[in-house]
Picture 1 (cartoon, helix red, strand yellow):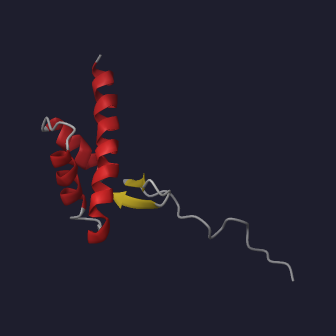
Picture 2: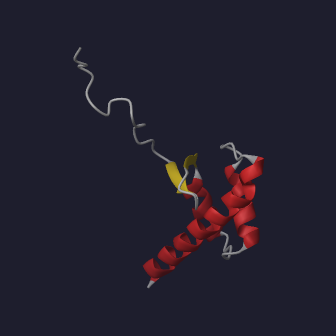
Length: 95
């Protein structure tokens, strides 16, 4: 029996404005909403790349996204790297 459903029709979620994918060291991924805005706010506040900043990003992110308590430390590590790249890119744009 032939299936007329186009390939890939149900394999992926269409892009959602404002959603950003985070990739963890084990290769797993999670989509989060609002991260771009949070990092822009943190940068505008003059927040430096640090563990405390990563904790604050996770705290703000968890207002609109479910952050599994068991993986909070992993979120901090991934978001610290994301914020580090964000700051580097923003600083290079200023030059």
